Length: 261
Image (tube, rainbow, N blue to C red):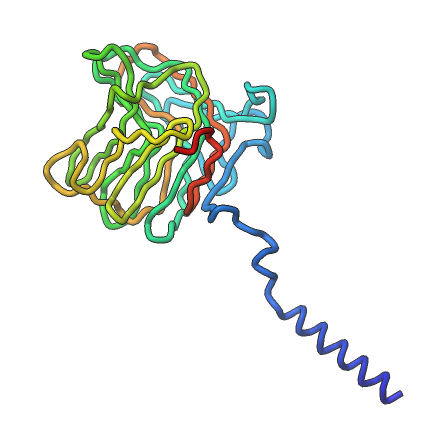
């Protein structure tokens, strides 16, 4: 009996230890240092205002989950009229070292052809300590070169309002692209990749950017917007249709975009 009592006591102690111990870190792993993910497959079809770690920000635009146009799953449809906006807002970011990667698959139905120099944004990062808005994905209609071109930009900070677009990176309508960007605080550097290939002409950094002679310096990032906004009134076309899928924000490059250049 004494032996049985000792065994029972030992089992009770072991059970108490197990109950008190925190869950193993590997129980819910965060692949690739993931900060946020969304593939829209778990959301109901129709209008949507929030998802995993994000909320909607719309004015003159809508967000809707629709069947995947590539034959599987679901995707996000972003629609705006005129110079309206429609964004997903990830507002609980805290990237280590103030640096992070983003990846999104997207298709823009059509880019503006008027007015001249019409400017559009797809991604915008912001935070504390500075009013600077960092726009790693965006672009502009350049009538001098008869097209829309990808460009990195910024606004409200000491370097002013600028978009450093390059003709080496044309924005192509009606086709899916896998787009990545890297915000690297070590040199306030923004790098962009299209379908896995780095667009070196689009890189900006502390001293090399498209604004004033002041240094380009990141805020302390805690917020990222992904979607669409065109800033000029009465654009042509009058409305815009954008599709997004497979969004991942992380501390390391996620990849999966083809040629990993």
